[in-house]
Structure formats: C-alpha cells, structure tokens
Amino acid sequence: MKILFYGTPDFAVGSLKALLDSNKNVIGVVTAPDKPAGRGYKLQKSAVKLFAEENNLPVYQPTNLKGVDFENQLNQLQPDLQIVVAFRMMPEKVWGFPKLGTFNLHASLLPNYRGAAPINWAIINGETKTGVTTFFLSHQIDTGNIIEQSEVEILPNQTAGELHDDLMNLGSSLVVKTVNQIEANSISEITQEEAIAKGNKISHAPKLDKELCKLSADENIQNIHNKIRGLSPYPGSFFIIKKDNQQKILKVFRTEIIDKKEKVESPKFEILEGELVLHLKSGILKIIELQLEGKKRMKAVDFIKGFEIENWNI
Image 1 (cartoon, rainbow, N blue to C red):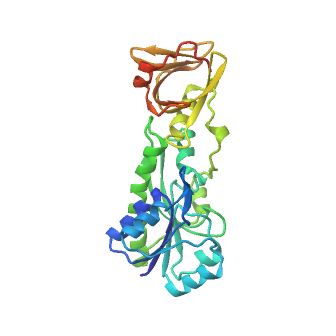
Image 2: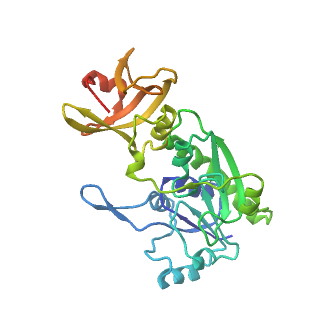
Image 3: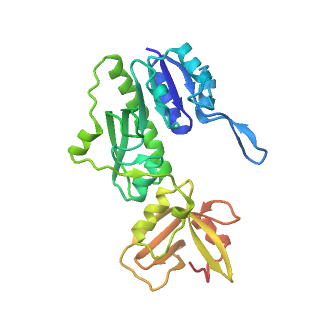
C-alpha cells in the first residue's frame, strides 16, 4: 500500500517515524515550503522535511495544493492512502484523490476541540483528560468520520509543551494502528454526529492571539494557572509589571497553586521560604519559571537572587 504523508512541525515527525519503524511504504512526504527565519532570514526547513531527508524520503513542497504542478505529482505517485498530521487545509481534489481516502491525526477527542490549538485550549479550559483521534477528511474542518481514539490524563501542573509530547507519542501509535486496520479492511468508523448523540460535546480550539496571553490578577487563581500552563512554552502568557513609573512584561511559564484560601485586596509578589510567590485575591501562586522583559528565561529561585521584586505592582 503506497502512503503519501503530509505534515510540517515536530508533532508530525513522531507519526512519520512510527510509520517507517513499522515498515510501511511511505512513498513521499508533503510539507510546507522553506521559510526565512532568524536574524539572517535564512531559509529554514520544516521538522518533517529534515526528518524525511535524513531517511531518504522524497520531499514535495507545493506552494499551491490546487495547482497543476502538484496535481501532476499526485498522478505520478498514485498513492493508495494519504495521512495528514499537522498540515494546512487541503482541497477536496487532494484529500479525495486516493482510493482508500485520506485520514488525519488530530490532538483531541473529536468532536471536542476542533480547530488549530486543541492542546492549548484543553489545558486553558481546565480539562482533566484529552487524547488523539484519527478521522477521514471531509468538506468541513475536523468533522469527518472517526476511525480510532486514544485517551490520556492531563495532570494538574502539566504544560502544553509536555502534553504535546505525550500526544505526539500516543498519536504515532494510533496512526500505525489505523493504517493496519485499513490494510486489513477492518475499520469501523463512526460519524461525529453519532459521537455527539452518545453525549460527546462539540467544542472549538481557535488560533491563539496576544490578547489571550495577557494575564489579569483579577481572574480566579485556577484560571490564571491553567492559562499559564496552557500557553507554555509558546506563545507564553504574561503579566504587565509596574515599577518606578515603568512597565515591563513578565512572562510566566510554570506555576503551582499552593493556597486557594488566602485572599488579599491587591496582588503582591513576595519571597516566601526562598521561593517567589504571587498573592492573589483567590489564593497564592508559586512562580517556578519566568522571563522578565529584556532578560533570559530562568528558574524563579535563580531570578530572585539577582533581581529585586520590591514595589512590583500588577
């Protein structure tokens, strides 16, 4: 069975590697065009392209999936099955091309968290479980028939970066399992409407924006904690710190709630038993990892050795 793989970031590399390790016949990889990055704006290859080149896989980088050039490439390759992991939207003439269809790996338990940032939003919203889903592509994004799902627990202090890695590994196994079922003609797909009828709810995971990243000390402490870990390590949430008539951005990457009972009228930072804590209206939040504007990211216990926090206001 000839498989054409579509993907761009690190998350997709896990699935591609698992397919090769399982001796699946991956005939090529479609990924994003190289993009300028860094101070020198040098062209940077995607994570998937780098992995594909290391494993001597043909790489295709169409700028237009609807174009004649890519259509000709598909006609030459004649894939039996296409697999999509973290790639852009595809036109029907592409996902409908193979005789066995095109399936996608999505980092949520569909129909929950349809959209661009399912890992982040699951944590931001305080979910205690999530997972991965393989489903056949259809006309509307993230709405196709479900093939398989695997579930995982979200730990209380887990960040989006850590959950990303867990789901990448879980998803790579699910991709191989799904391919095995398609090869054996043993899949038992269900529609997402059937999943909804069984009690699963539709929720959405839109793109992240800068306004979402701004933290307010007036929010509930649990919401603040969830937002910090849900946006860590990227794009990162932040407080606006005021001191000596100046404002600076304080990014926060890792926290822990140590008290939900104490209440203060106005938020304040304090060094408590050698650690940096933030007293909020709904409890005390321990700051574990941070980055002050103009400085490097560091552990809070190291930060307080070289920086004064007196008279910091939010």
